[in-house]
Image 1: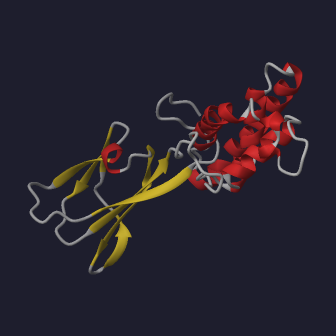
Image 2: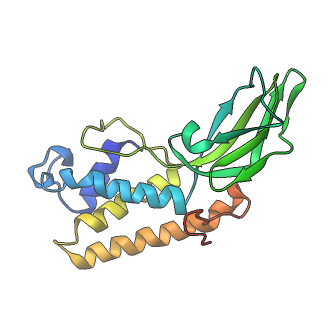
Length: 204
């Protein structure tokens, strides 16, 4: 679902449309500048407490290891880093690809990797979504799973319609929260049970 489609669906929920394209309807003008902030709130909730976004980073071999281990901070290597999937760290060498052994973690983002001269580590992690702003093109597709992206307009409508119809805004928020809870329960299939764990707060 593109950013343009998300905006259109949100406007339809606000009934702020009168023609074929709600984005060009004059009724939409008061809401459009407020949409990025509402979208970013929803993106954060969906990617950190709903259906996680998994990315990976490759760590090349050291030419001259200075010890048995090398220290890597994933917050420096991956600017969208949220938290580590410590069960998915692999080592590729000329002999093949295997699950990495002897890896140690420190804090939220520090890895101590056994030093190797001829191997590349692939580290999987859960990521924050890219932020949306006023310059984001309508063709942009947020990095969310489809079932999570479908909830974005509900949250945006709930925030944008508070001053116009508090009852309808509350209904949209209830529908969003219900959908978020479904994502939380289902996310355990993909994260080994970490369906709603946050390293910042420690809740499940």
